[in-house]
Length: 64
Picture 1 (cartoon, rainbow, N blue to C red):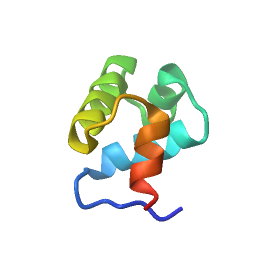
Picture 2: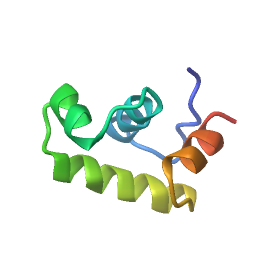
Picture 3: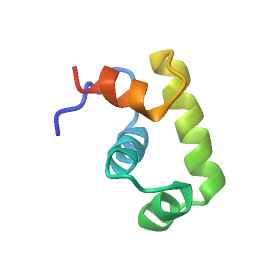
Picture 4: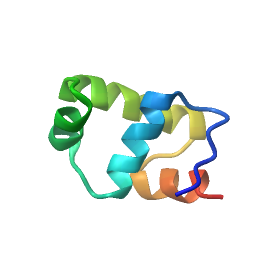
């Protein structure tokens, strides 16, 4: 999957990939060895950077 990474960190990129695969916050946290709260924070940052409100919009924007 090619992701437009100009605006995001590597960890945020990982979160996007896991969200694309359908994982929830808890599963993403397990995979990345971080807390679910950190996953939520990464998600909030991603939404702000891309000016979106949900994962569908994020995926649409980053896959351009």
